[in-house]
Image (cartoon, rainbow, N blue to C red; front, top):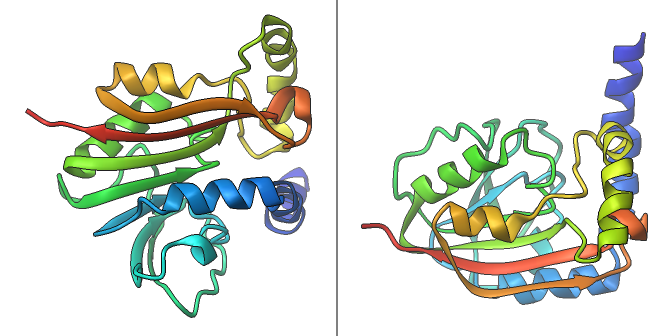
Length: 206
């Protein structure tokens, strides 16, 4: 019975709560600004219900996307080639994509280090990864509150973590940060999720 309730919550309730939280004007503007860098062969990981699709540049006509939980995606303008792959194990050839888009997905992958390694593998030399996530706070008080809240948040938000330091792990994985910023935002609950990470990073392969 608990499994049935969990599936119902994941399919019906959580997407509505998430879309309302991530549908704020400031978040939409961040999506538009970030996706302006999307061109060439594009991979979006954790596409969900396709919240990014209206905000890609008009030059983008087709993308590849992955998500382990397949939902209905409606898009008249952009063709979406969707695969049920895990971020930690993408079944694409090396150096397949010019750009990888990650928005509010890296917070919930089970192995962030492995996911970043896979992103690095499938990107072409000089390729870009575009990141928009909520993550670890900069002030110690909020970091403490995030540490306390994370187990509950992980349960209620379908595996989401609120205290990941994306930039540290990206640099350790070999990504070069072209643009990066951390700022407060109005994602709720604000003390836990209101710390917005934005990055445009490049990978240079030897």
